[in-house]
Image (tube, rainbow, N blue to C red; front, side):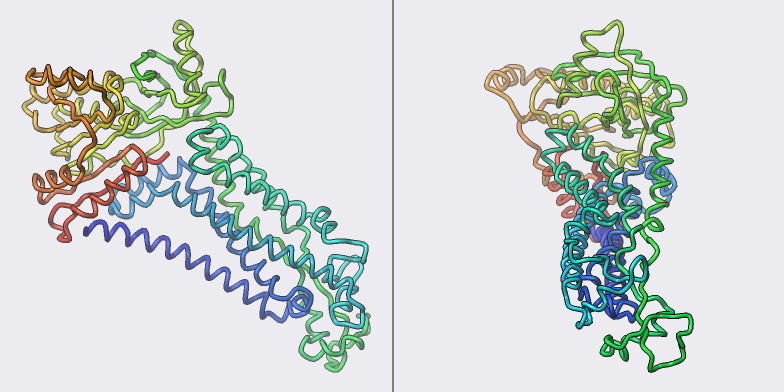
Length: 568
């Protein structure tokens, strides 16, 4: 429980800082436009909606500054390496990059809604002002200025709110930004991403339209305040009730005459959004240039193997490619789509002279890729590779004890880890801090075990020959079986190897009882730091996280479980 408190305390501090800055920016700009003397006459026309629009705009600028950073994967990989000497609780915050990206997205959507509603009210009140007689302060303010110096952008009664929305720079870009955001948010739901990844992929690139619109949104300067010189010639508190006596500004106007109220002059503020978002945009552009350059480097497919359960193994070579365990790459196949890039965990070890991925058929793109490799075995399709990028699994060898949990094809990052262990055992690597590894693989069908069984069999033999047969404890769980499989397992129960996998470790039928597993590990390693690594569904992640919390000791000198989950 101790590390759970520390981890959540660090996360809470990060979130509290972010939330506090949002609140500060909103309140600060709200008060500037709600109480500032410069905007006193503007408030006569627009009321409090002006302050709501500007407060939400400040929050939009701040969150738009941040939203690109969590998806700068090279930046995150660099920070992960730089922070390798930091505390786990600090380094683990990098694993929440996508969750933070989503939080920023939803916040931008909320602030956009507030900003849009406030400005729609502003447009209506501008229209109400132009319709008001010039014997009222609102009417008088609405007819001030011709080409410049005005406060109401509606210059005649024939102009309607729709005219302002669809003919001004602020109006047009506002509509485009809002539509782009709606499409991006709605296509980012879990169902769309899982079932129609291509829809999510393409629509999410509307962020380019969003940011371009955002950069030029404030160029029109529709929201205006009184100029500093005008505030000396027309003091709101003393001149607001004398609006019928206001005099035109002339070269001979006496600024020192306190009894003289000149017609107020207004100007818009300089656009501010670009100052907030230009730096992250430049950083993101450099990120994309680097990724494009790497993706254009030649990739040689050295081997392609079809495995049961519609799994394709692709082994590749690329000049200058360097990886760590648990990392992932993006793969593009130009013959299928020039724009689609899909993430896959590397299943090879850093010690091997090639890198590999295992791809399961899980959609149109993967199905087409597997089909092309099977049909064109002698002339495999050209692939482009971007990466590798870091994940939480890179820290696996920094723990004394590690629990690896894979569900289905989610076993792939652990293939890399187990292969690396095999090489380290062969070389008797003294730098290996890890003393024990518990590996759990949960599958729905027996065919999925086939391609991974060879690796486990090699590990079994290597550990026996090196006298470390207790180093790896692995459990395989079959969650979907029929009577024939069960009967076959019963008939061959007394044999030395498992009837399903051929391994020494017998397959378990059903799902793991995680409370029992964690209890066993905590009893076996009462003073160890245990890293729990998962590549699997969110429901399983929640269960494992609860167990990490439950079985971690309040005493930091005793067993501590640290939960880590793969996020792409």
